[in-house]
Length: 379
Image 1 (cartoon, rainbow, N blue to C red):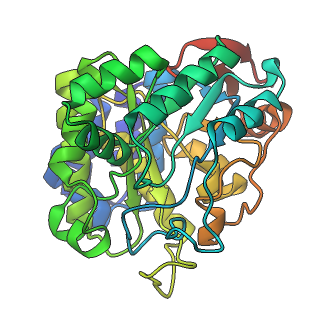
Image 2 (cartoon, rainbow, N blue to C red):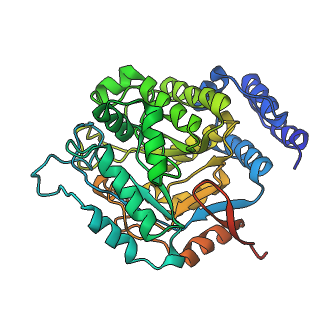
């Protein structure tokens, strides 16, 4: 469908003039403003957003939905920070805390067959006693074990602590990590890039400017990254828009973000302890608005571990074109917060079937979106 045809269909609806003006911009391929984005959050209905987001997604990547074959390694959940929304981190000595040695992490990878794994995703708590050398050794040992595997590792918050402890710049930190085997970086730790809000939910964590500076340093060092937003807690729509604006502005400069991943707040076992979570309609609205506003991001990912398989599949009709990975029951971050997927695992065939059921072509990718294999949907 062309943009002009879509706009003609939308114009038949009984919409206010401001929403119609935003639709006209999107159908013409024109960037929407922060004010437009805020209005979408405040006023736009789900059907309207879905039509537009699906159109934009189709223009960017057609009917393709990406996935990869990955596992998560979480070296430790011991953390120097005590974020109120977090159900994962524990102090040293807590019965629910753990510390994996390099040998234990290597064994976890060795237990998987080579053809079932293309990416190792490594994130964990900011451990007070583990420094840059430990993580460089970990990367080197993994590459020695599986030379072809790609490693996507360490949030900006972890990188910040490594650089501080080593007394070197972010650029020098990335130089060492790249030399050891780092291929890409995840987007965690962003939460909401608003320091007034961060003072309430993650007061000791790296501030907004630091998170952005670390991702810029990664991009300038040749390390592509993802970006996230933790939504559905105490943030306002205006704070979401400001967060997205900071990401879009940096992407204009570096073009180093691969994907944007909205991460839903889950309420169990954390100090924030809200009484409820966002309804699924608001999850889908958030995905769609991200697709419409982040015009310089090719990929919007539905992290099915956080959402559940069914909702992640529905999100494919609201601007999403990435389903994340097979995981192999290797992460506890969301299960400890009460997510539906208490043992998150999908086989490659299950992943492909979920994508095909949504009427899309499944494409296995690597960590930086190179195509590995395509599985066309048979109508």
